[in-house]
Length: 387
Image (cartoon, rainbow, N blue to C red; front, top):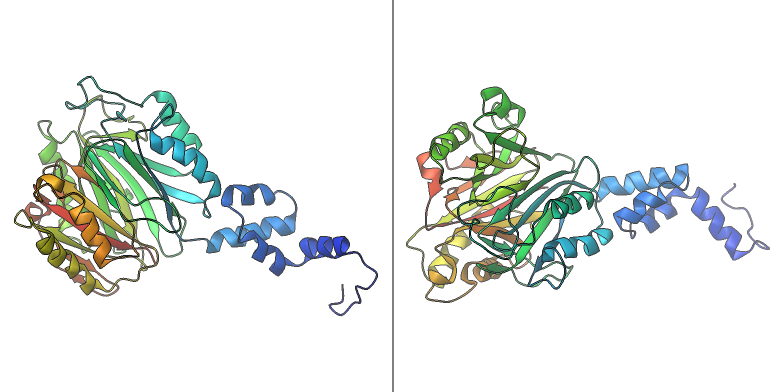
């Protein structure tokens, strides 16, 4: 139709119908305000809407999260209930999801020595399947239980991050497919560790590797420390930032390679030119709010953009309020003070992995070895920017 054609005598309804059926720019603009789940349904209406929806999904590359703390008044963990409600309203198509929940109320599929005690639990095979059903087919879900959880509340005007050393809490970080960013989940046990599998996961012989979030489970078992070193040794020689710690368990994806109670390592390998990262180590002698702030402020030297940047806090179970003279939320509050616009997530675990390091576009500071990557009674505070 000619752009100058006179619309006099044509009803507003007909005009709107024409615009929504023929003018891609208008349709795209409208679809930018539609949550992704509804957007996928709208894409089935016609070819124009399908093409517009695809373009909208390509530009919706800002990660998001859902978090919750209990106690829950519903069957199942508080996070599962919040996800079921809020995933309907997210504005991205998740490609990778990192889930962490407290091990006290959400037991993993394999019980660790701490979980063998009688306790309230919301876990069941049905709840794991429910979690998987919430996300699209092909979405990689890594779900972990930890002794304690650090999270930032959900919502566009999120409140300050909170440390939960006990009680029901959890979060799910949703990563969309992003240009210049490759996120590969990995899972190794003693049956699957090999040079070829490390390379397939992007952990070795990968010049684009920037950040590795790495979590060991069943770390107290004989042979677990030696096994972990098989993964850490090549990473220590790389220019990537390594951060994480020892968790209680992994309940998704289901284990197929190793037996019940076996030790292993899971994580996310983040590669791509747009990824940057920085981390600092709060040593054992950092035991006052002033000292914590002085250490966390060193992250400012990386000068990372705030958009699409996450903070991660991997702390020892022996820290928290026990370490700060019964003052609660010290490290999370300090992070918020230094980085008020960056969400913070993490856990309290049974050992920490990381060091002081900055990874930028054209340089890395500083190199380290395997021994200096593993710690106790410390906190690894990390920033990850995804472009």
